[in-house]
Length: 239
Image (cartoon, rainbow, N blue to C red):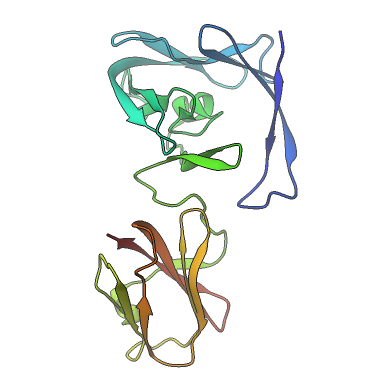
């Protein structure tokens, strides 16, 4: 049997990867297995041949107990590259744990390696946001809209900030008015879910009118940086 090592990094840092101590392999029956220091033997990570009514069991680290799910719905999901994959909606049999989904060739809504931890943990907060294959994005979680959250002092723009952003959703032009905001900002930028910056400027005036005709339709993140190094963000939609 041939296993593959799993590496990890944090955020968008692709220069420093770390071995997770986890091995995976896929067999000819479209099943994925996991092996690491927590288990004496390999564990079934995914079986994409399940049908409605079938049971899927995830084991906690060390295999001390299992969490059982039932397949309640199977749908077809089109990836960003046009491929169609099966999507399985899973429901906790005893309603102790959060419901989830898995996608053939992608993984669990808790994350690629996380159906074990997510499926057997109360208040688990990891989520699969997107997936890349050979450097090309093939999956985007529709509930998230972006691939990365910045681990800095970041807050959502609120009414008390008195920042006017219009129209939302926008098409060919976006206006930003900071004239009534009590906060002073150093810079402003707009980027997409992959982190690609589409517009950036130092704040030298209180009002901006941004030509957005060249922006592809989708969800963007507008981010304001204060002179204290804090960030205020808001998701905006281009139609």
